[in-house]
Image (cartoon, rainbow, N blue to C red; front, side, top):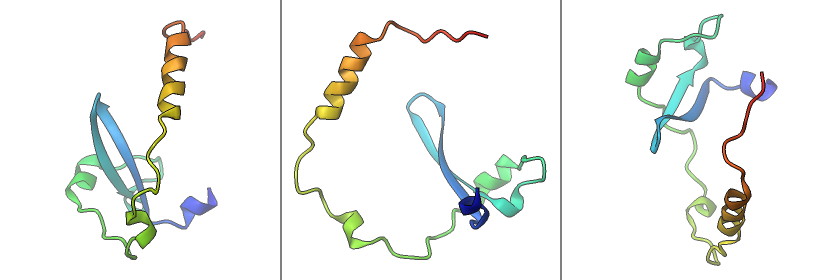
Length: 89
């Protein structure tokens, strides 16, 4: 994508084990033509500091409390589910 071509880093989150998340950062100049990269070296390099300070809006607390509507909707979906999704090949 064009927006990714302008960047020099790709940031993400990986979850190799259930409940254990880890932030990741890959510099595009470290990725080879076939898309592979040295994961061990990427882990040793510290993540760069952001160029800008976070906006004050990002640090403010919401004016209202969460209503729980999303949690209830997800619980209802889980109750209605028939179990694992079957994948046909």
